[in-house]
Image (tube, rainbow, N blue to C red):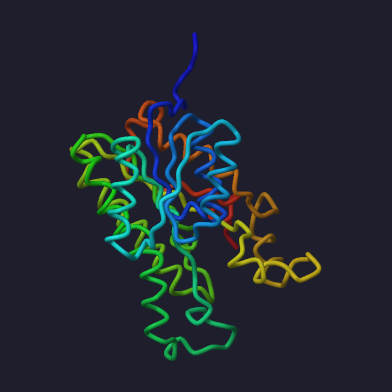
Amino acid sequence: MRNDLFDLDGEVAVVVGGTGVLGGALAEALAAAGARVAIVGRNAERGGERVRRMTAAGGQALFAAADALDRGALVRARDTVMSQWGAPTVLVNAAGGNRPEATLTPGADFCQLPLDAWQSVFDLNLVGGVLLPTQVFAEPMLAAHRGSIINIASMAGMTPLSRVVAYSAAKAAVINLTRFLAREWAPRGVRVNAISPGFFPAEQNRALLFQPDGSYTERGRQIIGHTPMARFGEPHELAGAAIWLASSRAASFVTGQNIAIDGGFSAMTI
């Protein structure tokens, strides 16, 4: 007998931030599982390339340009998706990142951290990362009493990391908002969960983790030394959790959860 718990055929998934490394990997995974996937992001070149890769692999995909901090652009993207495929049933909020000016270098004074830098990181990760896209794309889910929202938080939101204080605080807020929405929307048929990746090398953190010759920086060595699996994560390793949470059969009773995918980093003690 066929087990179709993780078959996403018939689902319409929207990946906000799908032009990035992690968001793109999640978009490809959802398409490979059978979902029709709309990539929403600012970079049309990257979005178009990602769509070409997905369609070449046999998936169904489209790109809709939108800045996650622009509600009007998000509404237009939602309307594009609905005009082609109908109401979205899965939303992955993968937009986010950090700002160098909001990062404390060794010896830096927290009391001098610029407010505009702090606000920028919260806008990027909380407002554009979850709040606005969820407000826009959840409306048709709530109307249909069906949907799964997956917010990409961070292990830094569970354990505040040194230096990236604004980013850690913003991701902690993402986890909190995830749980609030899960509680509010469970009676209305919409599940809300989070995935908290550990250290996954990408454009924004590569220089923090690696030397130009490919060897680890001091920071990179510290992280590897604190990770039981003794390596960094790879984008495809987020796919299983995303497909599970997206599936209305496999995760039908799962809401308000934060799934850490960090190689055991958050389980380590001194």
